[in-house]
Image (cartoon, rainbow, N blue to C red; front, top):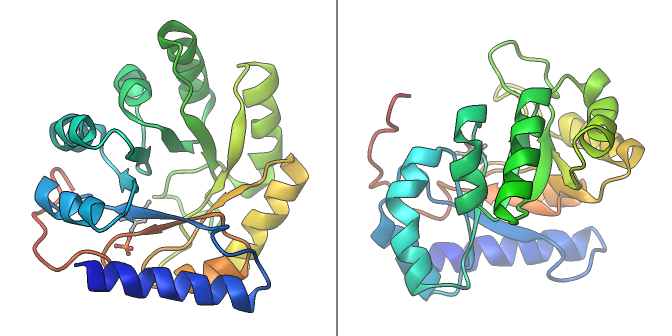
Length: 224
Ligand SMILES: *Cc1c(COP(=O)(O)O)cnc(C)c1O
């Protein structure tokens, strides 16, 4: 387990060096979805402190006890958020990567005010304009970030994308970076097990890595 972690960290460090970026400028999010709590805890024991889950329900079942034992852990929501789960999401997560429509922005805004808790927020962009995929269309992304700020009082940390599986990811990472510059945000959540080194070369600040870190003993994704 920690062998995998060491390898991924070494790859990220090398990609940072090759891109002329500062060591440690990329945050590794260990995506523990579909993996049991003890697998996540083994990584925590190996020194990993940032984790990602893609379902609020699964995270609620797995993480409160783990967070109690390991208060240093930060938990990121990287999967779709329904507005009726905004309350639970703001209570449980330290970052939310999937803000992609007004209704979610409004729901998060009122929960942040109500709970006095401000998770870091990323706007998800559907860079491949895939009909089945979540995310705001690229053409609307910059305006949406401004509306999140002006109409909903939200602070936006960055943009997030999941490139189409069958395409080279580089152009999608480049597009996300260009949109982030136009929107005036610094964070770039991009890169998964297959392409995190490429993402670092294109400026990723957060990479979301699951299967490269965990071994094969996952359980089926509920409802997937
Ligand atoms: C599952 C998932 C990941 C991690 O994918 P791997 O290929 O297992 O590294 C990253 N981002 C999102 C949004 C995911 O759902």
